[in-house]
Image (cartoon, rainbow, N blue to C red; front, side, top):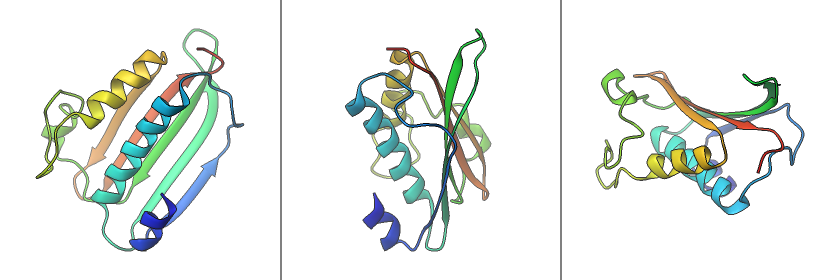
Length: 137
């Protein structure tokens, strides 16, 4: 992803507070999720935007630990009426989009016993948050 980020003059902020290799799962599927979210963020931003990626370990609802990953962009944001529909099959605001990218991301995260959420404000950018249980296959 680094060439694409550099090509758009995007500033990349890394806030990695979690240790590596704390989640067990399918590497290829999880990589697909992160690549999709990063590509979406890059498409939403013009030159001189900021892409922030953060990780941290927090306590989960059932007493276990959770890896939280956030991907935040300073792009155009998503209209409020569209945020709730982002994970619906075939819903897209992109000219050549299929409306399946985020649906697939959600399925993969749920198969890993996690949760994915989107927060956005039009004109202010978007944040996608993923929570994955630590050490669960």
